[in-house]
Image (tube, rainbow, N blue to C red):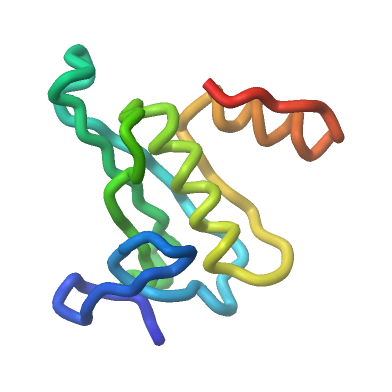
Length: 116
């Protein structure tokens, strides 16, 4: 099922609701996380997105960050996790979050990564 506009429906990949489906055949993705009211933990609500780039404008995946702990860092990291779940084989992930890049690099080098 190709990913695309919200009108195409929702899926429950990995047990959580998201817009889209799989990113089969994709080997590079851009990820991002965002939050509303980031300074107030009582109101904060975060979202995440995975996009396959300009060459694949119809291929993307997005959703609301699950769980009670709503931080932008967790949304950024969750986007990477969802990208890995939705693809097969080698994958290049582009992220603007230095903490996610650092944690991913440590993990790939066999180091322990602690959640924030």
